[in-house]
Image (tube, rainbow, N blue to C red; front, side):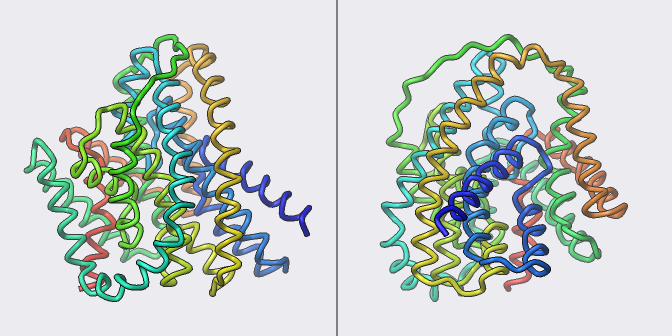
Length: 391
């Protein structure tokens, strides 16, 4: 059994590396395929849990590489693009990934410290919290608006993407979030990068010395709360944390790394404690094993620790390789290839109707980016339908 555990652990790490590096191939897609496989071929669900956990945690480390170098962020890393691209354009792209990677590693150890107290705390506060969730989501949207310089444009983005989210829910599409979020957060940014003829200078390897106290405090405040709320993600948690405890731009990259990994890891605790699936990975595990016990949770925490440490060093190696060799790559060509991959994946998974959604979502994303507000506002595409569903 130990051999199988190790094999599935490292298979998950490899899968998480692939999903992290290739935009559009998300862990939710692999999780859905794994669920299909388990219904046709029986194997111990424990191995599936190990694979999904290792894949999900590894993904949160590695996916900062394309978000920095390609400008094609996952929905949880889009906040890293602006400060990360500033470092990339000043020849320090590795530094941006180093900071976010460091944050992700910190998140692993933070989770181990807060996991047991969190279980008891969630059981106490969630019955009350559940009654006010829609109002908390409304409050978060208000915070997003108030923290923007151009509040009117922020309102436009929130209403526009919220309407888009409602519209998509009326369509019969396989994996509707794939074309929707890919268009809003991925394809839109790639097209603008091609149009703007982005030029990436030769990169240098530098290791910054940045204090981690403020990012840790901000993450501990916002990540667990946002992990309990439906429709919320790392982006919103980072904005809330940074609003409460202000971080420098480099500290913000650490904060984004901490929250990205902590929200994912904490979703497994949420699944065990209250049975709620707040991430695609948690949803896949619940589908395979509807009821987790304490032994399952302990195993998940061990897998998180091991895969997190491995992913940290793996991401560091890949970031150095990317930094040294990226100037040899034609950025425009690479961006076009990435865009083609996104289209092919959308057609394969969601069909022609999914492609239409991708086009609409991409155009919406471009318009929202042109309004010059944080792209986190576009997560209203999930938050607003959730609010109306809960009220």
